[in-house]
Length: 200
Image (tube, rainbow, N blue to C red; front, side, top):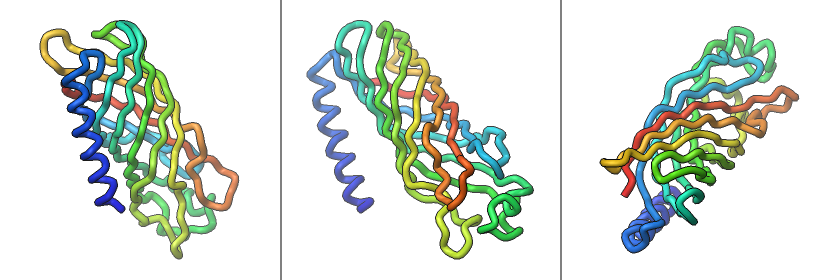
């Protein structure tokens, strides 16, 4: 399955690159940077943690002031359980306290670009697929995190005028509950993404 996804992604990338060379209103690029995230919810240390994101994007400009920007982004998120985690969630024993959690997501944001060629304000939805997780707080094979996360994205994009370098800053707010345990508490992802990339 993973090999098929990589093959399809590579084929799509080649097609997009070819189209970008023939159309001045269509651009592609790569980007990466910091993913500063936290999981908000009972039982978690809600301080932000530094991680990373990497991916690619396409810009489809309908005019000088409006366009769409779909992206495919791999990001890593980490969190730490609080001291009272196992007392809140009885599925876990005392060994679950103060454990680090690492989540890897494949995110697909679809952003509306508003502004000039050099400075764009971005807003749109994002769906993230959980690729894997470390299971150091999972007991007896129970899953704690849902496989998908729907979020809202807002931010700013700056295209440097002389060199093909872009800078971006955005805030990602999870809209759905990612807690897959049988209880009523809600867990939600939040992240600040700071990126730098190249536009072709």
